[in-house]
Amino acid sequence: MSRAGQYVTATIPALAILGFFVWFANWIPQSEWNPPEKLDIGASATPAELADLGETIALQRGCMACHTIEPGAGVQGGGRGPNWAGIASRRAQGAGGANNLIEYLAEALFDPSAYLVEGYADIMPAATAAPAKLTYEESVAVINYLQSLGGTPSAKLGDVPEPSGSTAPQQQAVSLDGAGVFKDFKCSGCHSLEAGEIRLGPPLDAASLKSTAADLGVTAESYILESIVDPAAEEKEEFPPGVMPADLGAQLNAGQLFVLVDYLLSAGGQ
Figure (cartoon, rainbow, N blue to C red):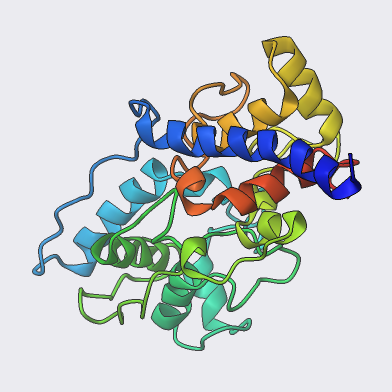
């Protein structure tokens, strides 16, 4: 058999598996954790009322998985994102990004890659995207809550410009190589490619993935695919549930799934 024929013979089963999991993800009953229902926030809500709602939203939607509130610690708290304690007073001193506090906070929620606080990686998805999926009204509530941390909430609905469009990865031109897909979808925000390095989610080095798959009695490829298209199926108890976007499998096409799996199963993804 020619080399081309061998390649086709080896590729067809892999693509068939990918196709099955993409179909399976859209067929299975969804039992994954869902964020709380969207809040009905009236147009007459005052900034103080919005700030109270914003605190609840920040706690419910997983913001505190990366951010901390540590008075006296400055921007460098103990979290994987900047410390929120006194953020309004710190911003009054100017530290990059938009000059106006409300504009800065809106930019941080709607387009977090626009300005990165020194020392932190570009790992935050837009607040309107998964997993938080904030509505415009909820985003304004969170902005008021952040204003209250070292300042006075002042933003009313309508004062904050709505985002020009979704900044979720599926709306962007994403790469077709594994490293690019891993970067475009900000997987490194929750997962490390280094063995033993724990972040919000488990490490994705090849050895760990293969070991977990062997414990489950499945192939490594099947385990990774299922983890992407149905992340609630095999969640590890030592990590918080429901953080992995349940719709990630729908955002990736079969080609992107294929190269991502191949990338993760290479030598530590390197």
